[in-house]
Image (tube, rainbow, N blue to C red; front, side, top):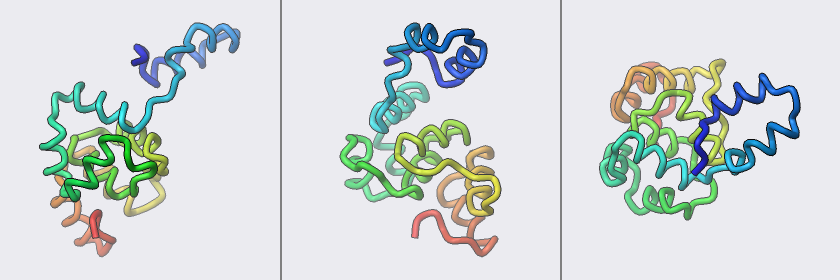
Length: 143
């Protein structure tokens, strides 16, 4: 796995005087993760078990395991957000997770996305997030 995170690469690129040298020096770090890679990295960093995350996400176990195996090329955005809540990710980590899943990042001009971002920031569960959405007459996270 690469040893520099995205923020480090962004900072180095911003300060770079020569893009070719930047690309050459960071060749290994520029290999894009897969969704499976990023999920594995998050589980390890946060000392989480896949089984507990799946339970907390309230996703169908078979479908969730398929996401973790990399067997779902583009999982539904709501399913990825359920995993993000279950993993207690920050909004920024969630945007990366959405990116690897081929989905759009959280958008601050969208009320539904704002509720999700609020829930992530405030460490809400899937149930608590759905309650917030319901109280605001917005679609639930998981239908």
